[in-house]
Image 1: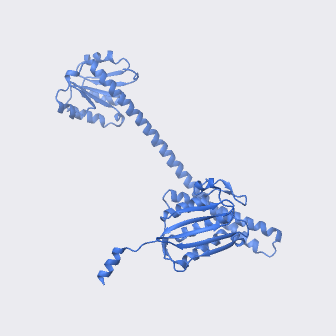
Image 2: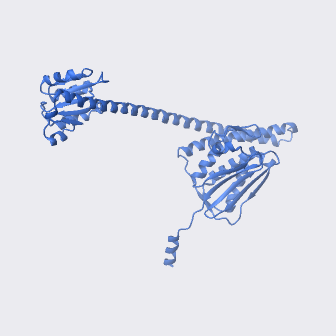
Image 3: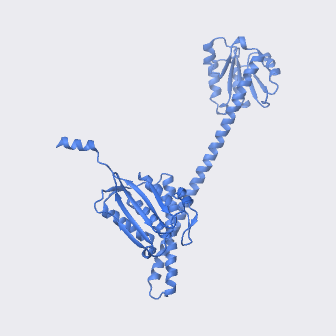
Length: 386
């Protein structure tokens, strides 16, 4: 035997000579002897052997398979293997529940030692796998704990920030509407409003991205007709802030669209993020267009601008949170959290989102929402009833 200096072997046999005959062939193993099944059960619990050898003449008051069953039932022996030696009846060997058996004709110390060498290798592999499993379970527990802490932190940040940011926006609006405000300060107040609005969008998007990724955001779809879609887009414009008033914004929503099932609040957030993204990448006086079209089995929405466009190398990671990592036209660092939310929200409705862009000529973000198709079988049933 090689490489098993600390291997523990518990030998259950009627005669001490059997373990003494094995010892010269197992110089690197630690051998323990049990003269009967009661001692065997006690020693197995304390010694925690890698392999238990059961000779056919081991004195026992119960069947051998019951002894093996009792040993296997101990959690600290889950990796222990069993070798039955000297059983000539195949049925007896199989019911013993051993991992390996040797008939009487092959029970010489040399053969037993060779079989033990094979079992010890298996036992060592099992032990290694168990240790690896324990490590993985511990890592998973740590990861789950970190995820819970992260979720709690994001939730706390969003809820603790949302109210004061909203209050700041309201106060800035009052200041901006005050006729006593100097003209040279009005621009600073406007910029403060935009930055506060951006911070509010960022914090809410962080929470919603985490919710969707964790499967904790429950959609509340409603059947929306064209006037409702137009109203949602108008509300999204208000969410973006006053910066849109410095762009030429057009909205096209055909009046005869097939209604679509979608969560109104989530759709409003999608439009707010796409409009905010267009705003960030266009200059004052630029053009932003929102268009809704009905195709075969889905509605296609688009938000386009004539701004700076997107570098080709940025497009593959555009909808991944924290992957944009680039400055906008206005010097603001863009985390990409808003577009990450849009992708997750659109896909949660069964649609898809993508972008077409030419550097220096602007970008168009498209997303689709599937239309509910009428069930032909239900129509047939109605005709039969008539």
